Image (cartoon, rainbow, N blue to C red; front, side, top):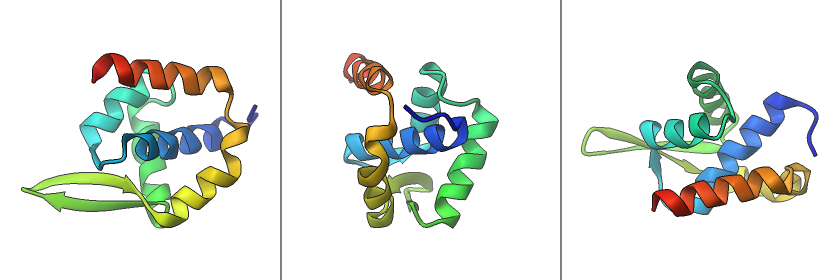
Amino acid sequence: MIRNKLMESKLLILYILDIYKKPLSNVDISDIVIANNIASYFALQKHLKELEKDKYIIYSSINNISYIKISKTGKEVLEFFIKRIDDKVITKIQNYIKEKN
């Protein structure tokens, strides 16, 4: 389990983007993150900016809506650190996503 909440939050954001297999809007990712108490809205926005700066996520625009997807580098980082995320948290996120889809 990760002791650093900041690192855990960023890894969970990458995890969410990875399991969706499609780009998510800021609203979509915000709903998931906030509903699962991963981070506050403002912390999420800060994390997204940092993840983009580090090239772990990519923004694209379709019909004037910005979408976020995990980059190749982000996938590599996630694969390296995924075992540090608590299995209970991963299960909670997976169940939430199944319920919403």
